[in-house]
Length: 80
Image (tube, rainbow, N blue to C red; front, top):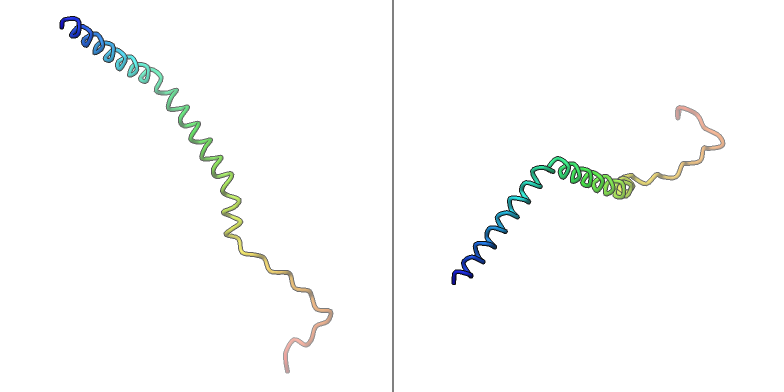
């Protein structure tokens, strides 16, 4: 029974140490981790906008009518 309790205590200590170690690692490297996440997010948003924007603008633009031909001669200015 004592061996089981010692095993549980040992595992508990290892888990606690690993949690403290991971927290320390994150605390020491938080600036680099935040900067890396910011760069990846900026690249993803830029890529998404670059791919989607031409299609969005093209869908919003009205179709241009054909340019009418100019008449060969003109009439009077006033209908009097």
